Amino acid sequence: MSRVDLLLKMTVEKDQRTNNGEVDQHSVKHALGVLSDNLRKMFVMNIIYVVIFALPFIFCVFVWPIFAKNYFFKNFGYNFIGHIGIGYPGIVNTMAEGYVLLFKHYMHYYVPILSASIVPMVFGLSGMFHCLRGYMWGENVRPVKSFFRGIKKLWKPFLIAALCFAAFMCAAMYAFVWHVGLTKTTGAMAGSWILFIFFLILTWVVVTILEFLLPMFACYRFNFKDALKNSSILFLILWPTALFTSAFTGGLFLITRLSTAFAFIIGVLLVLIGFSFIGSIWMSSAQKAFGNFIRPLYENGKGDLVAKSQSRRGVNPYKAQKEKRKAQENTVVGQAAKRMQAENGTPAPQEDKPEKKKKPQAKHISYKRKK
Image 1 (cartoon, rainbow, N blue to C red):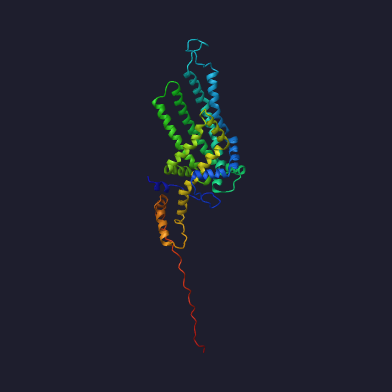
Image 2 (cartoon, rainbow, N blue to C red):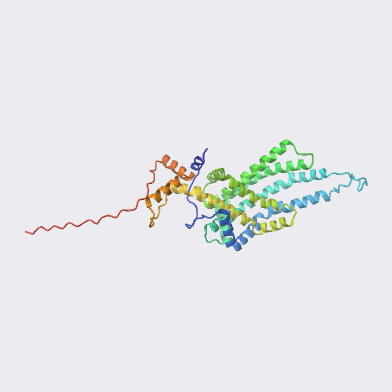
């Protein structure tokens, strides 16, 4: 299926912006500029989000594993000296025995609770993305008031997305924990490697689709089915850059798992401003995709296929309009719009011609002599 056929399957409508500003900068550059201009507001919004919604997830990811490992390897007498000959304390144990208990704990308690903590984390993004869309569009946003207003408006689609994503991540984490547990104890099998790689790639794809889906909930009023369909189509069209963006943002969480001072600094910054930073990159990238694909299709559907060119001194309006129209028709959006017109029976757009001045009509005066 070609890119044009994919675009024709998209559901389009007008976005929710309240101004006519255009986002024509590079997505990362635009996101960093907006973040620096609204750093204080972003910081307040990030703290509200972390304290109310993301704190259980942060505890499960960064604190729980450390406590669990110390508990099972210290409190159960696993000092690993039973094989060195001195016989103290009289218990022969191995590292594998400690990992068996640790990963049983992960399977029974850690994975379900971590999956449950994903629900409020994703649900709270409804308020954050509602604020971020206004920052990216140059609207006046109050971080506290707009945050809770976004939750009030967008709670339903974000809650559905949170529950679905948490259920998927629960299955993926069970596969990850099972595979890592085998590598630490008896050794990984071919089946565990296949399952691990499959869920790793699938998780990468699902997170990338969320990169379009969550901003789409905030910028449009699609139902969940249409928003998911549009996000999947945008992923199929823009998958190289989208996968890189999701890998970069996900890599920030992986860096914090390292036992270094740099990882500690990244973790602190993530708690203070990191979620706003990641959300800004996602929102800016998604809005750039919306402006390149959804908005032109919406305007073309109404018949506004080519913007009117301004007549300038020294520029042939016929030649400039013809070249501009030909350049737009050669793009993927132009081909999709052309096929959409053919299916709907819409007449092809005519080239704008300069208006010709009408000659003033002369008044005919009768000079007949009165009788």
